[in-house]
Image (cartoon, rainbow, N blue to C red; front, side):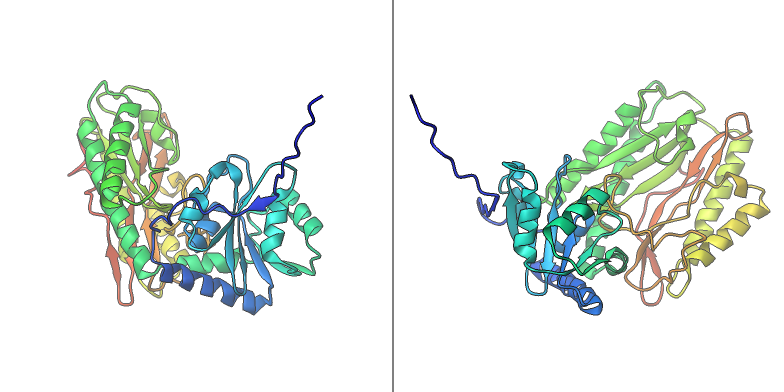
Length: 406
């Protein structure tokens, strides 16, 4: 009878398969970011930080994971940083990480935590992203570590991400340019009888091709377009459908090029054919609110104060009840799959003061319900870089009835 040969199956291992890939930023950028995180650790007297979110790991390491239900980490101690990735990814995480990498296997349950523990060592005071760590993950952490303290470092890490480096701003500037290119392609594809999905695909393809040309060493992933028409414009995040465009439709152009996890956006209201008088009035009111908002974004101004002024403008026009969401947000490593810098949004409950290095949008939206004159969703969106003296609008695609009636 044949005897089975035991096979050694490690819990985790290193896998440097090929040369390091070019990173989105220079190594000095990641060193600077990790130094900032270690300042947070020192302030809270932490032995280690275990980052688990896509945006947290990507910001500090350059590696943007694809979860598919598996956990990932970036373990940061006072002298070492390591991404922890699943065996299914092979050597790609190691090639893309600006730090060490450790691969965990699925031969037995909880090998992920064994790998994390190997790099975190005997840490007893551990920082985590409290807005991402699930109850099950926290229970496992407490099982594998003899912890004295679990501290939420997510707010401080978010505050660090909110101030962009010159390299990040350069990346965002390129994203705004590519969004404008996608917008032009989308506008050119609009005609009666064409489906939303056909217009969206044209815009997405144009942006991805330009990202491939401009950033040939980058991974191409996650760029998308939401092109909405008619009733489907009532929500900013409504998915694309196969509805055919009709003469008289209100249209919403939303182009989102993604470069190495960095999100940028262009959003515009258009009409296929002449809008009615009511539609034009609402559109022009939203454009005026957009221009007012742009004029208010400057260093030293509080987010909630910007919101209050635009609210007052809409209230004076009896339109405030149709406002859909906040008037703008931060940019960086974020998308509809991951990330958010909630501390830098133009809402009533955000009192953050704008300062140099912040990048925010201005994007007022009015949703007029079906049955009311001018029904539809009206939205404009520009990206603004806050400097020491003023603000630069890096979105160039035109807006308003003079430009966007097809």
